[in-house]
Figure: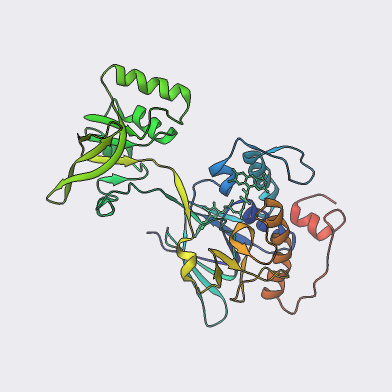
Length: 344
Ligand SMILES: Cc1cc2nc3c(=O)[nH]c(=O)nc-3n(C[C@H](O)[C@H](O)[C@H](O)COP(=O)(O)OP(=O)(O)OC[C@H]3O[C@@H](n4cnc5c(N)ncnc54)[C@H](O)[C@@H]3O)c2cc1C
């Protein structure tokens, strides 16, 4: 793990639409932020769950694709040069004696920050697990939920689970390199791109990939090593597949994760906030977007945007209590134009 300490005014946890817009609202007030997300791409649910779907309730954009919205937000926050830390989960958050916060990410990045905004949506997206007894102890050695180095799987007996694009893409990529490869999916239909499905079926017809319709039932292991996996096939019979490495692509599911351990007042997996500052029970920790709750809360992108605007003013006051606050319009404020890089 790399060791890096970043001192900043604000850290935003979650690069979904609410977190991205928080960068903008803070930037307008001249406040610098860093933003981190467990996922490798910004956009939260929009990018992860429905990138191609149109959204109809963004003000002044009658139709906007979900990924398009994220791309537009990324464009809008560019002038503020926020530090973007993708593929990093916020793991630890502690208040320091001087009132600042120490936040540590899964990549070992340490932030020393004056305030924290939690914009974690429905939580951190984690891979859906294989769900057979004893599987956890093989994670990272013989059981994988992502591929870090494809060469690790060359010359191996592989069993790949899943019916979406990841399972298909890796089946196609590794078929020429693996010693053997089986693809296990719970049903006959695949969710992946039709062209990939067709290519996979060609490999099956050519005897290069074994296709099994069924569910993982149990692992066959000996001496602490996986030797195979029993599949309960659609006919109800058990079939043993030889395996040295298992690759599982069941998609991602959100989990509140480490946030639940930070001493925050949480109600039904959401952080309780007030509706003036969107501050949690811990002064200096704010929560916006789908992750928060208050009377009348509606989990809409629009709500997250509004919350980001009010939270920005509250954060400014938290960081600089002596500073006089006043509302400026982006249309006419020279200070805001400067921050936005707009020539006056
Ligand atoms: C199919 C579908 C259609 C929808 N359509 C609409 C619509 O038409 N209009 C509308 O207004 N809303 C719609 N929504 C809801 C909308 O997508 C959410 O309200 C919005 O995404 C919430 O934004 P957010 O930034 O609060 O959270 P999210 O988009 O959930 O983003 C949160 C981010 O935080 C990250 N994160 C969580 N925990 C951590 C951690 N510990 N460390 C680092 N990162 C972390 C997550 O990985 C995630 O990327 C729809 C939702 C779905 C699923």
